[in-house]
Image (cartoon, rainbow, N blue to C red; front, side, top):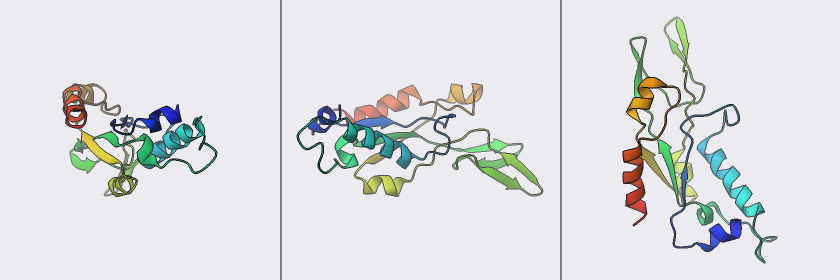
Length: 149
């Protein structure tokens, strides 16, 4: 599989980052997801160079889409959900953020040659299950069209 993906040199290679961490990925950052994907694809290579130098991340991934997290109103106080399992101290009270957004280090991702792309969350889903954000379909398609021409 890794050899096939690496051979597609002119094709955009887009990864959609999960909207939130689940029990298998809790504590993983966007960089961790990238590392897991790149390691798996390098291990699955069947080309002559497979036992030599592994391909760099940019070979397998050109863009990383992630959900934009907004500042939210929590019990009348504005907080921003940007840190996984964040415990926000508000005076003498402490609130545990119900969502576990995935940390996205934009600078570190760009140093790998991968372009991070911010996509809006689905507003209706945010109302139903704010702890489980999903991509807004229209914004996701808009972002895809900008890359895939």
